[in-house]
Length: 149
Image (cartoon, rainbow, N blue to C red; front, top):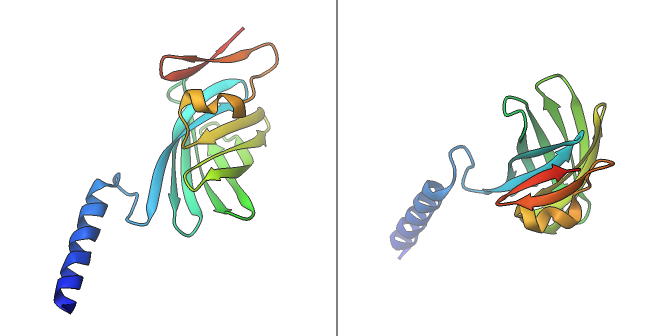
């Protein structure tokens, strides 16, 4: 009986790890990030681990070579905090709240301007949580967000 249990667990663990993105690990989850930072639309990905820590990267839609990477920590009771460092040296400090274990929204600030973002939500689901810069509005164009005058 013990050998059967160990074999079943090993099979489950192996299959679970195989379906995860590379580097995500068995006890983690990956989801999309949609953000408005310093007047630009960004998209990316967050990887959260079971212990509440994680990593995030975002990339500008208008300048694909420009991106930011960072880390965060979170808890169900306190929400989360994190920081990003961008390719031009800009840093962003942010906080966020969970909607579910894999979905949430947040805001931050940088020297170039404010940031609002969502994680685990589609562009359409993100709309209520994102704030457009002055004089602009946010719309969903296909499967992407866009800023319009």
